[in-house]
Image 1 (cartoon, rainbow, N blue to C red):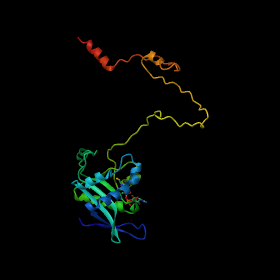
Image 2: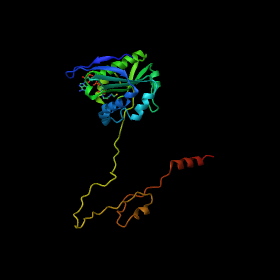
Image 3: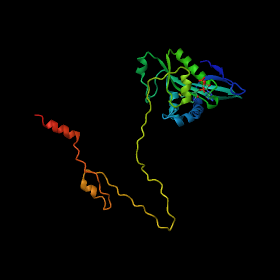
Image 4: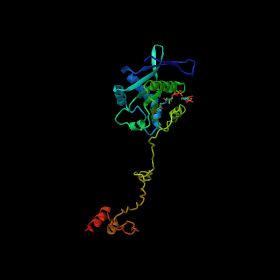
Length: 251
Ligand SMILES: CC(C)(COP(=O)(O)OP(=O)(O)OC[C@H]1O[C@@H](n2cnc3c(N)ncnc32)[C@H](O)[C@@H]1OP(=O)(O)O)[C@@H](O)C(=O)NCCC(=O)NCCS
């Protein structure tokens, strides 16, 4: 593919020109460092770990067939800087992927899966993300795809707004739910120490009465134990026992 160029919106005096090229093996380490930097903040706030998960996985992706990895670079003083990265594929990749291909087939959708879209923090808000997206949409059209499909964390507000203002809509997807489990702390609260030599004040510790089906055992804890005011619980009849009894009445 011929290198494509675009000029960024004026942020400072210079307007760097961004060029697109394919990722090469020699770029892997640099690109990994770039991705770590871009996702550092995002990964701090999202429940689902945003890609890239590990360098090992990133290196494996490079070897996989059917994946396109594009670098967006600016050049100056003989040096090239990575300012953007995009990764996409026509098929769902990896064995741990949660996507259901049938969902798309049944809706006559031929998606281009956008696995990664990243812009260097210093270059965000200058039109580079839009350029990356334009490039992906251009590829989608060339490959006969009908949609760009991607995953973004619901609380990655900046990215979500970015996609929504560019006509992306929500597909049916998992929503992470949580419920607080009320429980006592496993560790005792802090306790002030007495001065060395002073007589330590020992707080009386209330005895623990364990719940039990046997009323006699409950009173056998210690002589200081508080007598249980609870009536002994009746012996439980298991569901299996009930079933068995019914079966036995059959002729
Ligand atoms: C989401 C992301 C790709 C957008 O890239 P970008 O280069 O900032 O995109 P653009 O400059 O084309 O557009 C950014 C929008 O934010 C606005 N913006 C304003 N100030 C901004 C700032 N300081 N930083 C970022 N965006 C800003 C822009 O005006 C633009 O608004 P618009 O949507 O109304 O056009 C980029 O923020 C990013 O890489 N984020 C971290 C990684 C990530 O979350 N990726 C997506 C995971 S799926």
